[in-house]
Length: 160
Image (cartoon, rainbow, N blue to C red; front, top):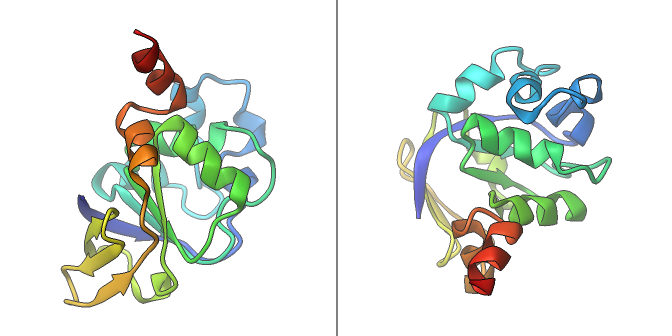
């Protein structure tokens, strides 16, 4: 389970918005500072206090580069909730150890709402409003990848 405050964005947030390409040559420590800056120049600071990113439809469309989920993870985002994700972005999140859940009612969540996400049961409780939302369940084998910090770490642990 994860708890935290939400920071919310809309539909069709692509990887160029999540991780602007003009900063890709910088290391992740530097490039992450510009994550989501086209929509919110203060996102990097806000992400520290709002570890749950909420979005609408088609979050993470665009290129398949891993810098987008890595930037969000580096900034302290623990979970991304969206109505639905671009498939490659979804898988890249799992591969880098970032939890992602789909929720058809994500639009009901507001910035600042305190959420409790039970990813095994497939439920989100909005502690601010008292509402409950169904979300995708995360299979146990993917939870193992996320808890290990991503696919590479998981494979290292399994190989030892």
